[in-house]
Length: 293
Image (cartoon, rainbow, N blue to C red; front, side, top):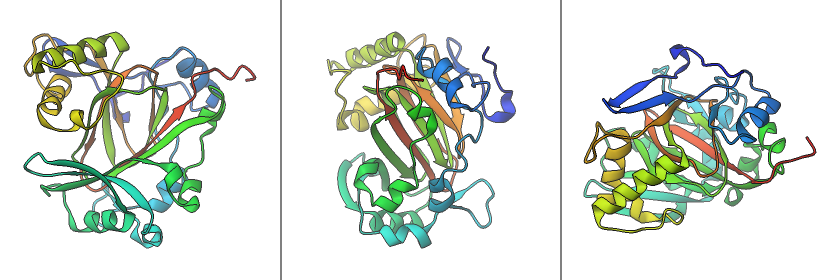
């Protein structure tokens, strides 16, 4: 039987509007790969692993340092990461004038921006969706495939992507083509999820309000800027926004070492919160079950 941790572990029930309830994602009873497979992956059900399940990942220990004077903040470990400064990463640039550009650049450029920026910086960089396969082998080895993924599906990884930024960060409502395990490496993030039918209704309502008919399967930069970004954020994170009634969904708050399973087809939106550096990795697993386990 599944059970819920009390609020002290970061789960909470929020009312974003009188008709919109965000319920806490259920926490698995233990951190074993078998519990993950049987209670989350196979039934295709959102689930949180117990707090700090992945706190010993080398990337958490080597890529980030606790802030010297702020216990709840993280800093990028420049002494380690700068040695890979020539590596090419994917950066999202957003300005105070709502300009959005996505391009490749050296990791060193992003690390320098992190040192000079703060949460109040208007023009922002976000290392987003960078493929682990594009990074140097030493960095790839810092993020080994968890046993939870190896023992589920076919045991292989469809894709692994990395996000590093300075809060506030925001990823609009979307769905992924594969189930994924979303692991927090540093800082804090809040994830809101909707089941496939609820998410589709929200997406369709937003498109109708904009006079658009975009595909839910193929999402690009249009969701990261302009009116669509604004309306999606109000719908998921606001207090009712432009729509009446809100939507029923689930919420998980992640700290370093925490992880949430997002099933195939489930819609989700993510916000980086707090101060310092926030970082996470998404591991897309294969669809097929590993019947050998």
